Image 1 (cartoon, rainbow, N blue to C red):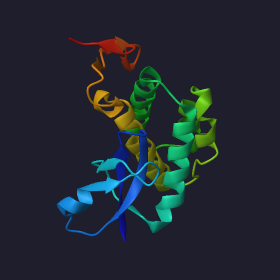
Image 2 (image 1 turned 60 degrees about the vertical axis):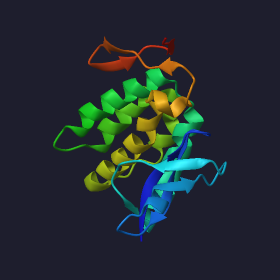
Image 3 (image 1 turned 90 degrees about the vertical axis):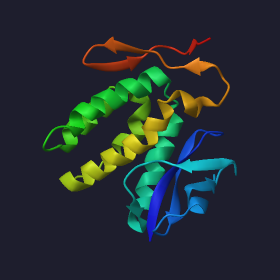
Image 4 (image 1 turned 120 degrees about the vertical axis):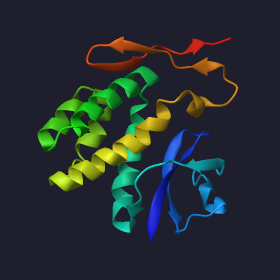
Length: 163
């Protein structure tokens, strides 16, 4: 069985949805298991049953960290640089995560194998990406991200009212 990640704009949480291929329109929208609001599938790799516990633990650690959009975007930029390397070592990912003390819960979840590290990195990207997008912060809020250059990657200015 395959699981695709989904995101709930209401409670701002990611979760896995069991799907069968080919994907149907009824599977593309699913109720959030936490708040029952409508969630949308996140374009990403699919996961299998053995990935569920790790995905849920990573999502919970990221949610508990309560990062703002600036921190999320900064973290995504750093992780993207790491993901571009031919090989990722556990110490490198741990070093990036250690720059964000609120994410200490993720460090304890780091797998030791190289292929498992890449998969885990993909999970982190999947959970963080919707949190960096303006549309994930509720429709009609009038808040839009403003991208600015900051150091080695892109960073997000604080929320700014548009219009």
